[in-house]
Amino acid sequence: MQLSARVAVVIVTYNSADILGDGLRSVAASTVDLTAVVVVDNASKDDSVAVAERMAGPDLPIHVVQMGRNAGYGAAVNAGIAELGESKYDAIFVMNPDCRLRPDALAHLADALREPGRGIAVPKLLNADGSLQPSLRRRPTAGRAWVEAIVGGGRAGRLGALGELLTDPRDYERPGPYTWATGAAMLISADAHRDIGPWEESFLLYSEETDYALRAGDRGWTLWYEPAAEVEHIGGESDTNPTLYALMAVNKVRLFRRRNRVSAALLYHSAVITGEAVRALSGRATAKAAVGALLHPSRPSRLAD
Image 1: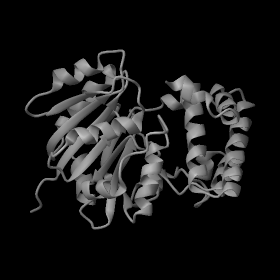
Image 2: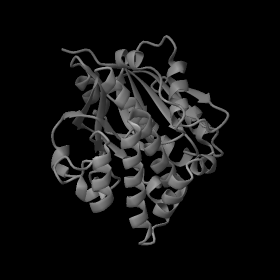
Image 3: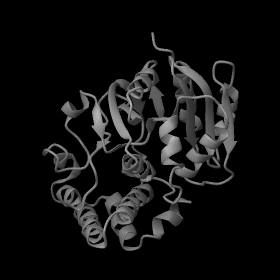
């Protein structure tokens, strides 16, 4: 009989008072040994900190870290892991406050990490209505960016390996290794985190999970998808908020440029601009914002502060 995994949880909040309580209650119901729960607040203007403090108790050992500013997601994750100090844990679960875990989700993810070489385990993400939320990605390439620009990301994800985002529901029925996945909920083994190092803090929001997963792969660690672990993720703000959408577009181009040759980066940048420009012609405010931000990359970072 396997011993229950020792899991530490890091949750990053920013004006999350309305959703944090349900997320913490789902963590408390998990069937693993919770060694610590760290809530890192990026200077919320609402009662996020008060919600976390009220819910702390023997069954939910919450520590609150207040960043004092909107330091970004990666910086907050790093602060939360630093707060764990000498706590004993086998893995760290990094999650958004808008996630709701099924009681056995963490146990399934922890079991997946028992296999040597697996450094990150990610769950099946579900929308609030129970439908699938596509979250798995292939390696970003200029070719895939052009396919998605021409035919759209949803359609490209169903054309073999042509798209970066996997959108065929059949792909989500079986476990397996992937290049990266949505960072709303991921379990990272303690050994892998020590080897990979801290999260990248320069992105503010979006692409930090891509960077982390790609660096894990660079170090030989596998990111494993486990469909038995189910997590409801509300999400969706980046699809409707022009500022956040623009920041997401700029950051994925920045990350690609850091990891690839200049020629490939130029092709990738051109593909992303082309795709957003096509969508902007249909009147999408988010796409219009993305085109402007891609032509002036410093703009969305200032707006997001």
